[in-house]
Image 1 (tube, helix red, strand yellow):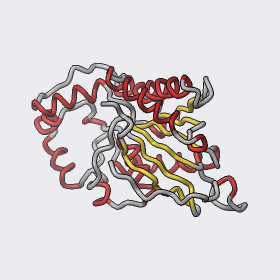
Image 2 (cartoon, rainbow, N blue to C red):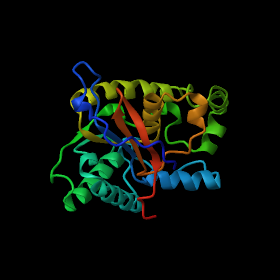
Image 3 (spheres, one colour):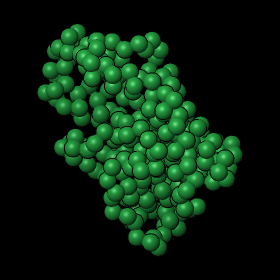
Image 4 (cartoon, helix red, strand yellow):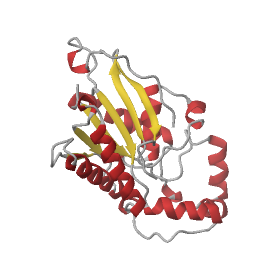
Length: 252
């Protein structure tokens, strides 16, 4: 949960850059959804070595836990406390239920505090969805080792950046759709602060693309925390890091 170099005061917003300059949002805030019911179940399963979790719905339909709902409200309060020029006025969100719930709760909290307009639209974009794990979807670590030992070994050998499970995606596959999304986001949100509500891998690949991190740098990072905030500011033709994976605004 490390603060990065802050941006100098007095930089020109991207909307004021010379004609022909790359179009960028003035501020990009990325968050992972609040704690989901699956986060809870898989944490218990990993600790106990369980072979299954009591989840029967699709990954896309997994909701927030009660704690995750509280985290989303904390995110909304953080949003409301930002300086006016930094408060996101646009929300881009994964279409999965847990991200949609996070965006809805945070937005209701921020608008209830008078920080953003009531009824601010949320844009749902499939490119922000979670990493797809194919045949490993909804399997615990113990189940993967027992039922797919060859895949478990291939995963260890190749590393997460490059490993693509059968029917699923590697981290770099997610990075490709993140790059595509950033082009559209820059065009449509130039000069405006934007909030992106997504998933751990999606936020990590934003860091990979925007900060140009290599494999070992990515692997050295702490996991992206639920409802953490990562911030980039437009400066000198790029989105520059201003904070990463911060959780100080969360009450628990």
